[in-house]
Image (cartoon, rainbow, N blue to C red):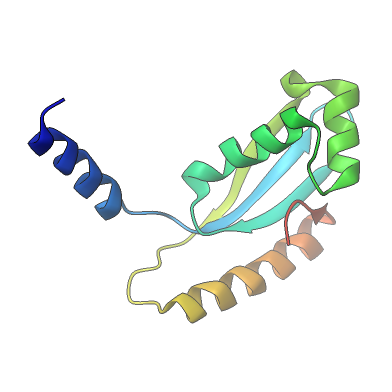
Length: 114
């Protein structure tokens, strides 16, 4: 690959806009739902699926649902997206925490991540 093309790929990756928000992992069979905040909703599922596939996700009841019912019965859902334009990292983190609490109460769901 040409050096200029590699540089452009790296530049594009660094400039890619990420969307923070709240996500859920839901077991279709039991309808259990685990919520979590994410600074990058588009990339979040890959990390969770990797941990679950390796059998070492720290949320034990979500791992148990994955082990019992399999990947085909688990879905990743975006609950809420928000734009972080003009927000400091502190404000993004604060909003994620606030909205996670709101959705946990609204949906009576457990945590998928800290």
